[in-house]
Image (spheres, rainbow, N blue to C red):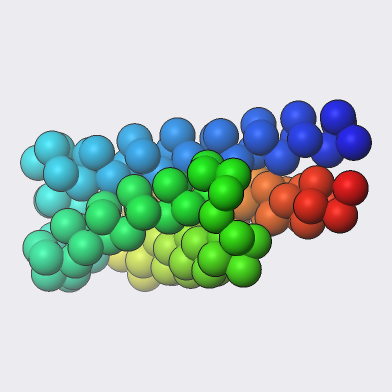
Length: 121
């Protein structure tokens, strides 16, 4: 039981920190804005995605949020990671940029698995 909680909170914390960091970069970094332009995305999408990431992190980290709602945040983050990987690949970016989001997708999946293990106990 304790091992499951530790794994859950470490993986969820990693995802939360990474998503908050990237969201903050979307609002403050000219390089992030240039990256969205590089992909051909409109500028408003950067703001929309940043806000969605902050909301998703809150949903995952607040224990009182129902599991069903958390599942939507997991799904949204999964779509973000897969889409990021595809965008990097199709833009001809280095393979490290393509693989990076997939690593976070694996961490997200572990967090989701351990969420259910913790809730069952």
